[in-house]
Amino acid sequence: AWFCGNREMALASSERGNGFWYEEQVTKELLIKAELKGIHFDSQSEFQRIQVIETVPFGKTLILDDHTQSSAVDEHAYHETLVHPAFMAHGSPKTVFIGGGGEGATARECLRWNSVERVVMCDLDKVACEECRDKLPEWSEGVYEDPRFEVVYEDALAFLKNWDGPKFDVIIMDISDPIECGPGIALYFKEFYEETARTKMSENGVFVTQSGACGLLNWHEVFSTIHSTCRSSFKHAHGFFVEIPSYGCPWGFNLCYNQCAFPQPQDWDPAEVDGRLAASVKDLAARPMQCYDGVGHRGMFNLPKWVRDGLRAETRVMTEATPVFLT
Image (tube, rainbow, N blue to C red; front, top):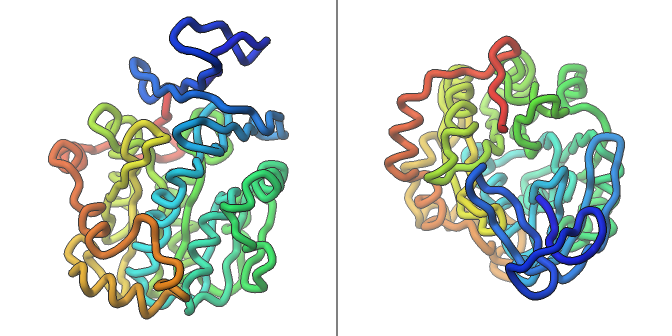
């Protein structure tokens, strides 16, 4: 990603519009461009570059290592989609683990559920988490003050391997894409799914992971391989997606389990989803979901034909010996 204008270093000259512009690659041949209102924060932590910018179409936006993570306009689409289908599959989760999730918005959605008693979030980058809490308080909405929430600043893989507390009803991986030399690449490997995640899940536990771009031009980059890896590691793996305009394309996720209270999410009746959601989420009528409901759920789990065909044909499995990187 980069900025266009007349400022030094990160900002270069541009004749394509008035004022300043933010550009980011969707694919090697395709860019998304948004008019820039300002840069609120720009720094380097031990692990990554952290920026909070504001654009005209998307509002405040978190950028990590030149990649959009979430924006004010559509972060609910991402976080509601990541959390609620997995919670609905379990039915009544009490213990939740979040790998990554530095904005605090994933925890926000988890803590909306009446059944939840404990949410443990493990993020490697304390600086990023603290800056999100300070610069993007709308994302976390006070989760740090909720007694059910706890955060640790460690490597998620090592933390889970060493976890000897109660098993988790839902494990959520809200992590960076699998980039070569990135800190989270091992969290996409078959070894992690089978040897760590599955061993820390309760009997009817559900696992969900963000899984990269899922558009017509880029579903094959990592989404299909992550799905293939999940499919080889769990008895059931369901790919699903949602439109995220600030990403420039639809985004993919994978929901996995060996057994759960409400299996086969692609077949759930919309009215049943709405009913169970209303009974499970605190103050849903007063604070309705912005993206997720029964009809939306049905759409999320009905992938376009080109993606379904690609998932069936995909044979690659990500392991320590055979990683697949987003380039």
